[in-house]
Image 1 (cartoon, each protein chain N blue to C red):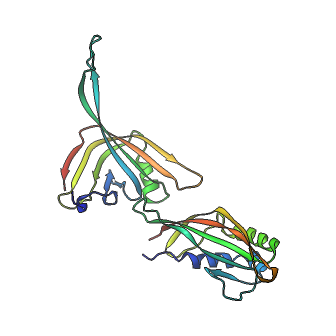
Image 2 (cartoon, rainbow over the protein chains, first blue to last red):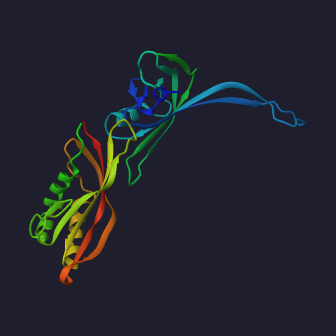
Amino acid sequence: MAKANRIFGRDLYATFGTHRLDTDFTTLSTNEDGQMVDLSAGSDTFSYWKFLRESTTVDVEMWFSGDGPGSALRAATDPGDSGTLIVAPAGTATGKPKFACNDVLVRSRRIDYPFDNGCRMRIQFQMNDSWDESAY
Amino acid sequence: MTLPNTGSALYTTLAAGSALVSELGGTRIYEALAPQGATYPYIVYFRAGGGDDNASPRRTRTENWVVKAVATDQQKARSLDALIDAQLHEAEVTITGWDNYQTARRTDVAYAEPGEGGVVYWHRGGTYRLNIGDSS
């Protein structure tokens, strides 16, 4: 892989509704998990599992300030709020990958106020539908 | 965007301390080096590390500066150190083009330097950490 093809966090573009998530972010993670059911019988030597359905979450952490990425986004991300989430890891130029879900719930939000550092806000989004990949 | 002129900003902040200037007997505050033959006591300050945080799209820097008094009298050096601290610790240093969101004393500087003719030069001060962010 050529170095030029590596994706760096600095190229990230992400929105929740009309709000930018990447303005002052420090990290964003997508977690594509699945619900499984254990089909093992009592006498089985090994475990046997069946995949039921996908359940994707996205975690984002950002500096929490009184301006744009702070107060306005905080107001729009109370737990239970819903909207469209878009994550573009390599920016929005033509052909770049785009991940989106049209029905996303704010699952949790945490704000830390450390004495000796800036405050950070962490939000976890729960996909309420498919996490689709397309391209710009 | 221009890199911050933190040295100039520190000078302005220190020189604005009337009690400090009075104890010094003038604005004998020098960046990096005192002039040859400078009258004691004086304050000298210099960069001691730090740089860009590169932690989010919003540019921030953490700069460490040593600010210390140099005097031929130990008590004078101590009192100047306390007055430097009063000017800088948890103060907002005005830096053109940048926001200073925290200034904090991190470590102490204290040592004696033997000079000619039995003179002892007392160095007292601290390392101050400035957290600043691009305000553009």
